[in-house]
Length: 413
Image (cartoon, rainbow, N blue to C red; front, side, top):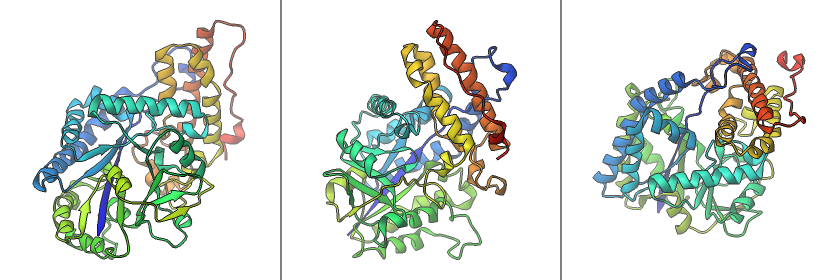
């Protein structure tokens, strides 16, 4: 018997507006509200609303045999409330079915685990409260930003009381094994690890509309046959992907909605197949083996490491300066300042600074408001300079915190 676990990531950042050195000390509103609204309304129309309606239809059509799991960031939820409340309502309708699960992650889609365990735990709690408020669920499964994972993180999450964690099924973690079983990290005792089947996931998320792909066009019947072929060699197939795959990354005219509409029926034709949520997968299976992952992995790029966010001097400098002021920001007890700082921890700001293959029109330019990673860096640092001035005023002491000017060599690397 093979269980199919669909997990979807939903995220939108609070994008910064173009902020020059001449704005420092004059403008305290850092975010591009017009752009954020524009993107949210566009994706709501092309992806969130039609796909939520489709999932609701599939759950009802198959009497609850079709199920799915989501992680929705706090920054996305804030923008649903402000720019697309109908999207939030449609997610609530999915939650009411009892066949859709919501996972826990960092509220601001941050890399806080790498820099501040205290901030990391605070963001988890903020996100947990959000899930309970809107969806009436108490999450027991954790999903880190961009599926960032290693042994230490698994142990930390276990100590916080979670029952499961999801991660990328990278080849170097599996070492020839299949992602089709539940695993356990070498550092843990109880928490279970579900690993993404990146090949089958990426067949939908990235290759679906590629006419040069040898399997194009991908039909629901063909894909279901690939699922069926795992009976006897896998217990679970984890299909993890960005929710924006449907209608945004893969446009409606590619046939992606038709494919998804037909897929559950084709998969359920096999009597040994069933859909499960992440929690159900964790509860129904014991770990088959142990994985040992010392270095951090993620689901980004072919390297599946952290270089998409921390691969150059721009990113590392910006990140260090941001977290350097954390204790000073929190010491102000000013909710507006703390919230602004947290919005700046969102990983997208550092992703925009990525210099890997930027000129090739790759995924790093998707929804990117900047013309270059250097412009992203300069904008971020200008904002951080102004923000730090505000913190200094709030402290009202002679001891000032300083954002270091970045050496020109960094800008020319």
